[in-house]
Amino acid sequence: MKLIYDSSDNSPDLFYSCKFKAPDPIVFFEFKGKSHLVLNDLEIDRGNTEAKVDKILNIREFVGDDKKISITSILKNIIKIYKPKKIQVPYNFPSYLFKKLKEGYKNIEPSSGTMFYKKRLIKDKIEIKNIHQVMRKTESVLLKIAKIIELSKVRKGELYYNAKILTSDFLRNFCQKELAELNLSCPDCIIASGYHSSLPHHHGSGPIKESSPIVVDIFPKDLNNGYYGDITRTFCKGAPTLELEKMYRTVLNGQRIGLKLIKAGVNGSLVHKKIENEFNEKGFFTSHTENGSQGFIHSTGHGLGLEIHEVPRISKVKEILREGNIITVEPGLYYPEIGGVRIEDTVLVTKTGIKNLTSFPKLLTL
Image 1 (tube, one colour):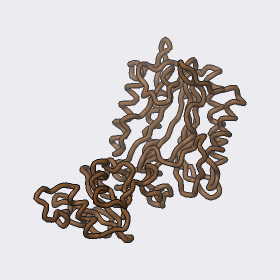
Image 2 (spheres, one colour):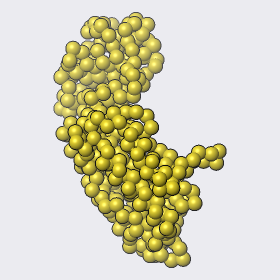
Image 3 (cartoon, helix red, strand yellow):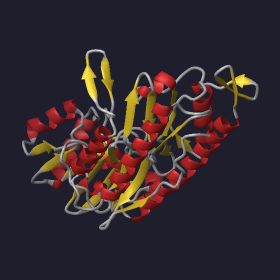
């Protein structure tokens, strides 16, 4: 028996297994190849219409004779009725429940790794379509952001749009509003310029300067189907410095190397190493000191689906890529005195290479 007690907002494995949006924790279990969803009176009618499971059960069936109704007694009654030989729960199953169930049932164990359903690694046609649609919508918003930067005017080294100083804060708020219109959500999108762009996860704030790198990283969730998209582009308004231009070309070429190497059966660590070697050959070295890190300071990419960060990862850790993986390819370079450059595509791994789900142009200067 596979057993989950969680909300679909918190558990991508639950949503994956039943396609039912539940804001509060519910019980789902698989037994002898059949999927079951246990719902209360409030949710059962909606469950019968929306959930993709073999059987919907009313929670009343498992209340039993206990005077005090609790989720512990309900789960114990499910186990008592179905008599599974073994129970597997997710790694983040509530510890207090695990302890209570373990007292009366020894063959209950947490799964290894963060992904309860390993088949989530391989995307089916519907999942690929969902992610592709998110990417198309996201690119439409990115295009509007790029247009604002392009139409902005330079005055005394700062960008102005509609007679006001253009800031990262304005662009980020604009981005979130545009995404919301498409039923996408990305509260932590990144639009960072100048020194902030040299910090990979800095959201960005303050005025945007002329000739400064502008890292735009948008990774929204589709509120309809739960799937994520992810894209990053680096822009510059005005003539970039020679160092920035060289760094951009190097990152772009590094990404091209990675995209050419990726296919089913390839070790992700090899892809990461080849990009790292390219950066070193071009004179962009990585260093770590007490004052911080600079250079190529993150992994090349990660899996994508019902979570923004999934396995497999393209990093120094050995991990074989498989046909049907959807991953990001996002090399970057970061130096405080220059800024940061990151270029990211989301791609589908195939037998012979990739299908790029990203179509947005890669241009530094706007």
